[in-house]
Length: 191
Image 1 (cartoon, rainbow, N blue to C red):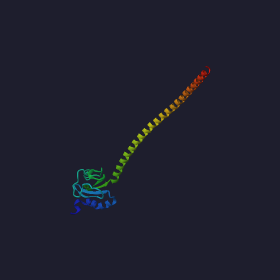
Image 2: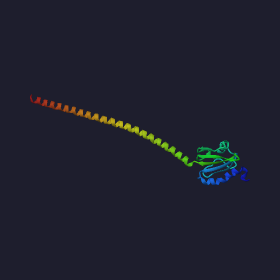
Image 3: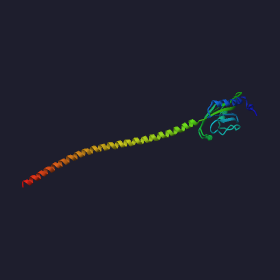
Image 4: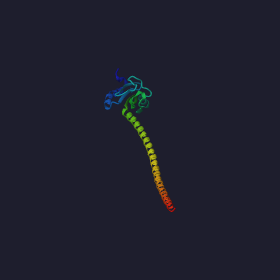
């Protein structure tokens, strides 16, 4: 069974796939379909979508979207969907023969690096939030410490003033005591 049964344009697209694969890195995969089934599907790295040559075109697939729209379709699929270990971006274009859509060419690219960067960005954001929260707590503690230090300085000044007043009172008491002592001596001598 030759591929020519699918039409000349599909045959041309299938013939170009090996060259297209060489133009891209290992994260890129290609699929070719007719309007009802996949003829080719290959991903060079990681898990693949649940697609195999001969499988019917599923209603929620890029291929179905291209066939229905009759134009280019681009989608981004998040990590984990369809069991994928990385998210991917896919784009499909119609293959036309005599003005009608006879199939699709789809290219998908696994987003390993982007997923890793998004995950790291999330962790970095959480770390910054934690540091920010710690800095806010530190700033509040520093303000409380400054207020306590100011209060202590005020109390120390009051204590100095009180000690000065106390020294004056003690001096007065000592002077009175000295005078009293002298008066007592005077009285004892005059008797």
